[in-house]
Length: 254
Image (tube, rainbow, N blue to C red):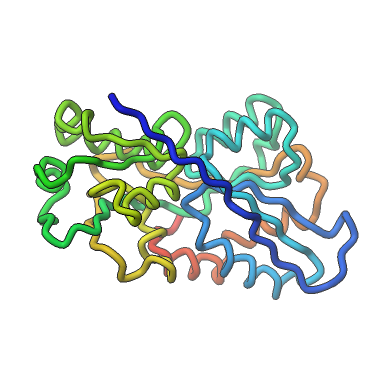
């Protein structure tokens, strides 16, 4: 198996409207599939709590867990699954009672190849035109894990394995596809529906029956537990306005 990793450092996504003290901000560690939806979410949250600045860092869920367990100063962890928040809670690094499922992710196969037939996921993956197939690292990225399950369910693991290239997270996997370094790739629907990528390339949704549901959950870390802004932010994600934003980016209701 050929493993290729693309290392990208994502800048923090910050939003603030008033001079702040150290106690008036929330630091969020967010799964990479959320990279584009965070900006509208934080803009909406600013209307609810304008005195609170939200600072976000994105990456693979598993990598963020490792950072938090090693003392990274995050108040809220937004994962692409429920397993990683539970792992944090079991390690004594987060409040298990605070965990909330805020969205259901959806997986798509995305390509910039105009000639690749997208009548079905299996046919596309099997096509001789797909010499490199990108997925997120299934060891740390839940969307990569879902892609691996889909390939197994379709009986395509053996055929697909020589084609696979791995991104550190699902956003980096999308970069493989958009840059032409992969002929197709399994990415989050939220990415291809984002203003930056909408109407670029072509995609087909992977049937939800062939992979474990991607239930995305948030949790308060031990650092964030005493922070009222952190608790308010997590509650906000379940409200009607935030859920409308998630829906625009292709997420299902929790």
